[in-house]
Length: 458
Image (cartoon, rainbow, N blue to C red; front, side, top):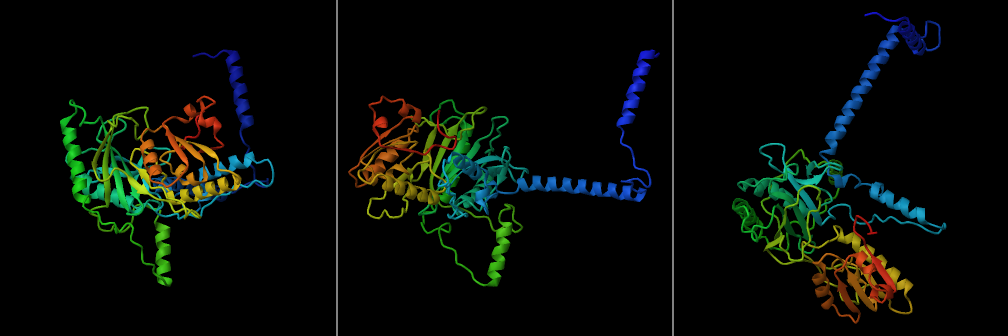
């Protein structure tokens, strides 16, 4: 192959340019000169640093798949991204130096979560077929967490009993495979009644309701019935309200006890323990439900809300969990008995939410000193806020789009001794705003809004 003179000249220019850009090596006596021994030691140090970085990355990957995601900020909740984001947002709105955005972290940090929606996926070995837990942040990889520090103890017991005792015994039952849309058990949803420690358990089943569908797979129906019967037989008779989940712990004192507790605190974030206690054989079952969800791609909702109730099956126990909140300075009013069937939203930390309601009551009382205001509530749920401020209002119109909320709200309201006019609208927040100007929404003195996590509708 022959090269023209022009190409040869161009090649020489490129070679000269490369040589010009090449870093010159200091010679003996010049600044920056290193002996062969110094250069060799520098290479060794770089190789060692690179190895340490690689080990740290592996440790971080391993750590992320063995830690309970809920415990990441448990020792310093103020560092949680959502808290820092909220603080930054509200402080950006202040228009004078008197504004202060307070962050309250005085509620218990252990055992507060009484509601948990937990995915069920395939385990890593044949002996560990089912994995129940939480998703690793920003992934769909499940961490099994039957020893979560933030879960109520009854939830941890439920996970352990299902995962170790009941699920392996059900012939043919398969965990959900979201890549293929196959398998049976998608999620388990647990809700704890705080006064008894009992668990309202909902099984989210992949498919349509076989009890309403004549063309349903009979084999899948038999697997479901075998599974639910085993849960009821194993845990349904555990109706003693004084369970291990609610029994107080004896407090040990002394230097030895403190040292043991420090060791537990240091290791408790890691879900996999060095010593495995005996497997529990049952958990305190309040009620058992099945929710049928046949959606696959482009649908992340665990539950679907239908007024006809065709996607739900109630198999055992009471219709709902009941909860009463212990408010401050509210002894002279009737406490509403809140009703929580599995189809409605319930705050996961009712103890902390009770303090929020205390603050709302204080604000209403201090602002309306001459008369009782009329009020409209958006995203009202079952009345967790509205029914606890009813004595401070002349009227209350609560609203929410979930059709299961209204009966829970009205039944609780009818049990209360009050002269306040109360009503409920099954409507979206946007539909309430679009009502005529003569409606209660525009006549109200006060608006209470507690939006869901996704935020306000536009």
